[in-house]
Length: 454
Image (tube, rainbow, N blue to C red; front, side, top):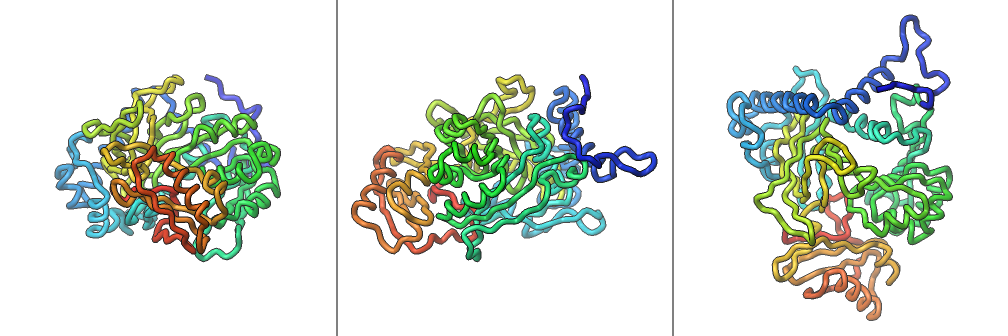
C-alpha cells in the first residue's frame, strides 16, 4: 500500500501555519473520519466484522438500559442475538418514540434532534437522531467521492423539490464549497441547492447552466424532465460530469442516454430513519455496496416475492449508531436481494434488485406484484401540466391525477389512459382526473405512483 498525495487538489493554504501543527484541528478530524470510514468499508473482512459486532452489542446494551420497550425485545442486558430480535414495524417505532422519547438526554452531552420521514408512503414516522448521526451522514457522503477517486474540484448542484409556499419558479442557495470543513484543505468546487417548482424545468435549466454543473444531484423525475427539455448533450456541454440520483429508481434507458453523452450515473440507497444504506457499484449498475460503517442489512426470505426474474424479500435495517432512537431489524418497507459480495470484487454485503418501497409496486387483479413506473416526459408529451400522480385505489383500479389543469380534452384523456394501460399490462379500470393542484399531504417527496393497497 502506498500513500501518495502528489495529485491531490490541495488549496494554497492547506497546511497550518501554527507551531508543531500539520493541519488545523477541523481538517484533521475530517481526514481522520475519512480514513476511518474507508478502513471499515474496504479493510480486511474479519476486522470489519469484529468492529460491527462490537457496535451491535453497544447499541443493544444501550437500548436495553434506557428503554422498557427494547428491554422486552432484547433481554435485560441486551443479550439477544440479532437474528432472534423481533422485526420492528413502523407502528412499533412510532409507539416507542411516543412513549419514551429520545434515549439520550442532557446528561449524555450529545446533541439530539427530532426528525420525521417524508410521509411519501403514508403517515410520517417521527424519531430522534444524535449529533453523531448528522456528522456521519455528511462525512459518509464525502467519503464516497474519495472511495471512487472522483474529481473533487468539480462543482455540485443539488436539485430539490420546492415547498408549497415557494412562489418563484426556482430559488437558489449557495454555500461555498460542498466539501464543508475540508474546504480549507482541498480546492473543491462550489455548491448550489436549487428548489424548483413543478413544471418549472425551463427556469431550472436557466439556473443550472449559469456555471459549470459538475455533479448533478437530482431525482429521476427532475433528470427526465431536463433531458426532455434540453437533451443529455446540452447537460454535458453545461459541465455535467455525473448524475447522482436519489429518491426513485433509475430507468435503464435514462442511464444509457446520459452515458452516450459522457455523463456517468450513480444512485444511492438510503432512508431518513437510518441514513446511508448502500452506494451503487461503479462497474455493476443496480448493485449497492452496503454502508457497513452505518448499517446491517438483512433480507427476510420467509415472505420472498418474485418480481420478473428476481426474487426479493423485505429489507430489515439495523443502524449501528442509533442511540437516540434505536433502529433494530426495522422493516423499512423496501424489497431487495442480498448477496455476500459483489461481482466487482468488493468483499462485503451487496444489495441488488432494490425495488424501493413496496408501495411503489403494482398489484394485479390476479395477486401478482410488479414494478410500475411512468416517466414525466412520457406524460408531458401528451399534454402540458404542472405535476401528476398515479394511485392504485383498488385491485383493478388506477386513478391518474393531472395537476395544474382545470380540464382535459377527450383526446388527452384517451392518450393518458392508453399510456397507463400499456405500462400496467391491462386488466385495470383507469380514471383520469384534471385537478388544480395535487394534495400531497405531509409528504415532501412527490412520487409518481403510490399503491394504497400495500
